[in-house]
Length: 504
Ligand SMILES: Cc1cc2nc3c(=O)[nH]c(=O)nc-3n(C[C@H](O)[C@H](O)[C@H](O)COP(=O)(O)OP(=O)(O)OC[C@H]3O[C@@H](n4cnc5c(N)ncnc54)[C@H](O)[C@@H]3O)c2cc1C
Image (cartoon, rainbow, N blue to C red):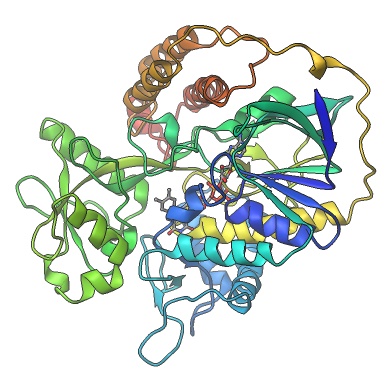
């Protein structure tokens, strides 16, 4: 197999990977791999904004308190301190690099509020296309850096590990099917989340949990995989993708209504429609269960015909393309798998317990989100911990690796005659049904057994993205089920319907 070298390899071109790459390019050649085109991750789809304590009267301490409260007592307080204290500097830097956040009429940064925030601290761009603007800014910055190399359509199949150290990645160039080893002084995993493991998700199709699977196979520790956040309000129409309707819409005053037209969140939680995501998602789940699976509605009609297309142009257009005019019609919505709070365990500098391997962004678990992520904290997480991981790598003396063993030179495994797409779809149904918003020991046990039966019979994958994604998705789905089984009490986003009395 061909072997090539780079100083640093970053797997993933979202906010976390790009922020890390920008820092690393100061010190050597950095190669950024993405599965599809460069802007293919969840970052591009982020709507609501970036939470950061920069508004008058707001403080990092207040941001910290809201983050800890949302995390249901499970956050790593040290990680939260890093996030809220370093966040303002990272966002100012983004402004210096040319990001256009929306401004108020006085020309000042316009801060909005989302669920479980007790201050207006969410910066947004192009109304509701914040992620697109973040990604645009970072990609533009990367393009100015001579030593940053982008490899779109390069799929990472696994990590190269020898004698307890990660030496690089094994990848396939999807444009010609050629596999090779890319060895580096350090590997940064920034592969994003797992939403695609669920039947209904707000995530793009690249979110199949590859990074978690690669790290797990390589022996790095994963944690908190039971904490999957379900966004309460994704568009729910037959045959239409679960397009996200940002929480910022409720932040601006939109109301949730059930099939009878009642405001079912009133009285259910002191924050009503802006209650924490898990609370709202469960309330919607209950309403849908009472109404044969029919969705609830997000009513924006009272917000004014002018505000909606201006403040939420992306959502407005998406709804309109599916025949819903949010100025005059309530939007049918239902929950969708959205964000993984757990991940590859790292310290506050992105280091995993596998030397040479770092992780940042959604694939990592610093403990910053605890059992439930505060809205709009993840773009900030990518900026803060992407930069820290890179800084830590640069502070470590590491030599170029030498590959001693020839294990990777085996002839490629044959692609077996299996309907991989059908297996993925079966697994996604199982996860939605049994490892979703309501979980029980019985359901999780059955799910794990059913997923085991779907596992692929490979010792080593052939160099094929679909095969590897299917194998990874099933592996990570099983890990989620097992983590959810092990946590017998409900906590944050993890709801055990058979152990409600244990809620802590
Ligand atoms: C619809 C939506 C709205 C959101 N809104 C907000 C918001 O308003 N505010 C907020 O803070 N957060 C929001 N989030 C969450 C946030 O967008 C993500 O958590 C964050 O962008 C993740 O960034 P990342 O860099 O970790 O990964 P991503 O941006 O997901 O990027 C992952 C990258 O890894 C690459 N990759 C994965 N596996 C492989 C592989 N095997 N080989 C090669 N490359 C690989 C992918 O190609 C991709 O480039 C939203 C998410 C969604 C889906």
